[in-house]
Image 1: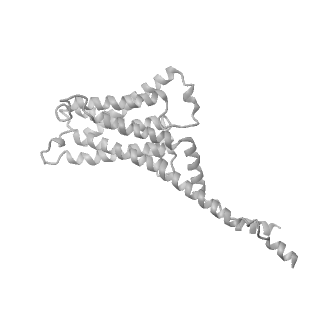
Image 2: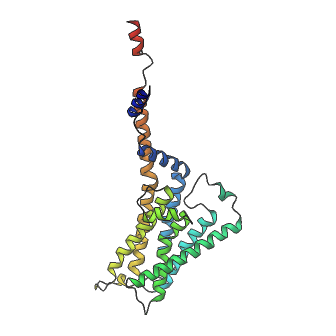
Image 3: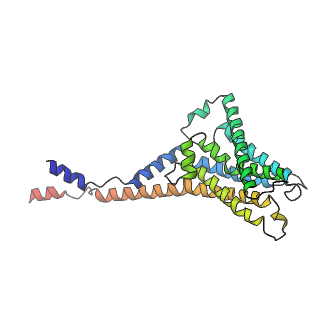
Length: 275
């Protein structure tokens, strides 16, 4: 009997890691619905576009970059502050705590988001200086550019992953399998930072174009990367995983139907007994 059991165990196919991953992805999508998060991504695109629209005639990034960037930062911060106060960023269906969250806790969340964003902006500004930004002049331009980049790249990570250090590591520094919030955060961070870094190459070139002045290419690259990240996050976090899960579920049903005997067909053992 022992050998028979061992033989059965050897014949039994191992559970595939892909199936477990797809099951986990499907469970995640029940928590993070496509409709609500898709609307949130569209609102983010609208906030991104609104922050770039000149609020009044004569105010543009060429004539007064500091004032212009302060307006864009204010619009972006207002958007994140509303979502933080309502506690609906990266919408999660089963997260019932947001319904009973007291007012003081909501205000603390907004203040914490603001403080963390300012710290990130200071780190980014230091990185700008280390990589060649003007040191003796244009301090306000550097700080406002860093604040805009922080709002576009780091604030989504702050709101999504909060204080979970392990999630920060998996999202930004690891190739391990990621949850939907970690994919969301990684998409915003890396798309925005990559285009920001790539756009910096236009600053030292001697083309003499107005848009090459510091920090216009940096900010333009950050906004472009954030717009790209909206599409990237929608596809990676929701559209493609849901399509893959639906396809594999339909294939599983087809295989199950082919294995089940038809109602009119006789069982092979019954045929043998009759003979």
